[in-house]
Length: 613
Image 1 (cartoon, helix red, strand yellow):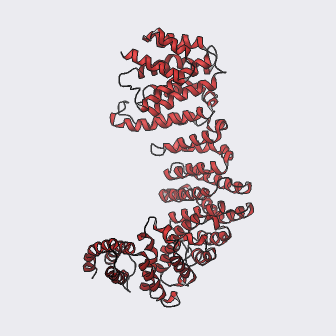
Image 2 (cartoon, one colour):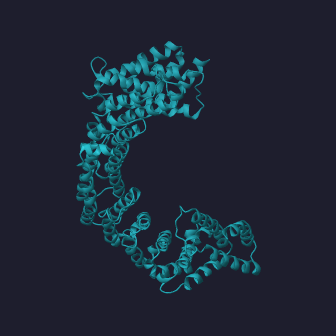
Image 3 (tube, rainbow, N blue to C red):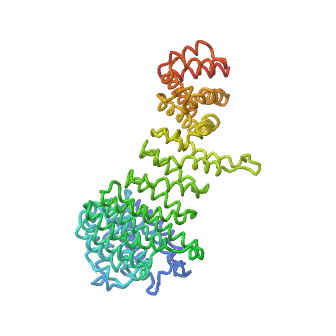
């Protein structure tokens, strides 16, 4: 009766704790008896169906969960004695192992699987893998015919054991075939049972991740098994998550195991052909058919794009022929986005593909980036607006000034869409409770504009496409520098103007240039606004975060002095802004003499002390 037995488990746990602290002949005898009883109780009934949704069987499983916790205590009490017991259990199984009764072989595998959980010091996995006896047990298990056992749960538990202790294969490499062939074949990925197929997809990924250094000679076995599964969705269906596991596995196998260029290209083409055909079939669906079930259609397209994103994880700098295949896949992803840009998951997965392909294809993604961004920005919502912002940021950081042509047509639509997504009240005023959401969107605007300037793409701001909105851009960033209550955001916006000044110094003409408008804004709006903001009683120069604002402002003032000259700095900044607000002459002379940002900062601190006094 599991109710009676379950009630005893807490008491047994306390006994096990006591035996761990005090070891003698009596405790060892008692431990042996407890291990034997626990072993018998861990066996599932012969009629157990492993249906965890069934109420009765779920109770059995909950009971065994408590037994496994006790199991950890018993292992901890005497790991060596427990390991001897595991060896005896396995040696007493009938041979061949594939003919052993399911309850007997299942419980034996479970003892092996959970053994490391009770071993100390933590992590027990590393400790047990140094134990020659335990390694011998694992080797014997891999050399057995256990993968021929008829029960699916035995098969899955063996795979779990093998993957948990997969580090063994790094030294016993010849044993990997005993696992990989059935796992990739009809005893795993192509098994008739859906649960086995599903679990095998996950375990294969975990195995390949851990053993990528030695997987080169096994790539064909694994890739062929994956190809046979994904090319036969009618007879061997799998879930969307399982498909993602497989595509990520393919990426690792092809990109991180040391295959030559030809092997990578051929294998990638083979496994992607059925996937591309599936996408093309979906894209050929008529609008009338899509309207019958738009949700399912959108989900199918989004999953197909997600698979491409997961596949590309394995590649960092692929050879040219592989890039050609990836470029074709990238085009397919854009076609999917073009077909259904209104679907949230299609947009989200499309953005992930772009970010991954930027790493794989490098500048080859730039020609398609304008259309990618156009579709993402036009259709994004407040929830996925960040995806478009991240594409623009990554484009700037990775491609520097070369990003300008790709972002030229996207900047103004991005800013307009961002402004439209800022939540407001019915009368156009921002409600207090929506202030955090408003700031969240504005932060992304500030960051995109900052990344454009910080990565040398400032010419983008004065292109024919964007020059008409230059004043608006300055106003947006001034608001962030002057009015935002988040110090890190304030610092970012001040940095934007400093970097822009340094990049445009040679271009600025106060009389006749768009860049000249920047200088007017700097002197008439930004610097006076920042000075007024930091002069408020709430601004504390001793606060670490606010001190960063002061330092960034000092750097901006030093940049103005160095780039525009002392005379212009004296007239446009010191006399117009600082002297007019009551800054003493001796401090003004300090600004004139400052040669470093640190000296400028000391002058600012003296100015604030005077103004606040």
